[in-house]
Image (cartoon, rainbow, N blue to C red; front, side, top):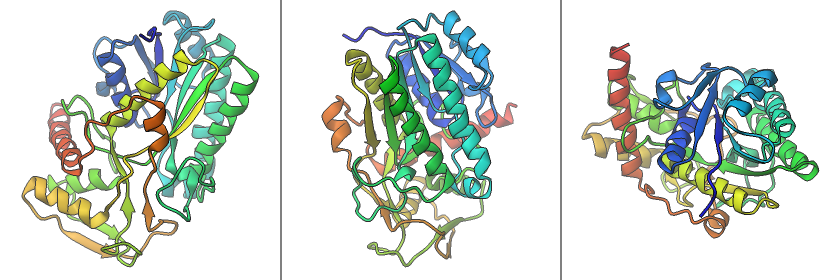
Length: 339
């Protein structure tokens, strides 16, 4: 039985971070959240979870949080989700991404080391692979990012590796594929306005928040000509973080890097068909040209995570992912109506 330690979740008021908080809380871990609420939402943090509004580069605040939460001197863990995630924006404003995702992560890691917090879980991305020549993608596939977002995350992975070699810190970097869906109990979900994730965009269209869904590229080397991606339910992803934390505690001399996906891809049109199926409606589809840098297919090889952790996905079903995303979209409309 793993000894449960206090956990600080950075970006815990955001989409994936808030689901990690729920997973930790459900499993009985003491958890606190820091978020500057730039893109996160205070309502996403459950009642009773200590919340600190602030920035991860504020070393004095982090030192106070660690002290108040009983972390440091060989105790505690940080799950690091805070950062910026929109790929086209990273191309237009690279310095924002190198600041938010790389420089601020460096400050956070320094605070972790200074306090003596021994474990970190890092929210990384399949964007570190760029446009891989082979799919499914393993962790040994060359890392060749094609945008500042991917580079900013890969730089943080490297900082963690180097810091772990020099200090009493072990870490797990989880490279996400396409995260989608929402908490099955509708306690949290994707709430950001102007989101670019396909399933989020599609359920917004299905609930009348958008007039249509753009399909970028119909001439890919895939069965129906549209891009294929590996969609992972956000709650399964959150559960992987909790299991990875337990593994770090049980093996303090080991660090890990693992893909997070199901190893199964769906095309854009298959996703839109699933939304039509679940809602009983027909979303208007607007066919357009490819976006620069989009690979034909990006699917994970999840062999390593399944061999390393006792991870048993519970929601590896496209219709279930869409159903939960749709339920959250409807609840979010109620939350906004109530102010």
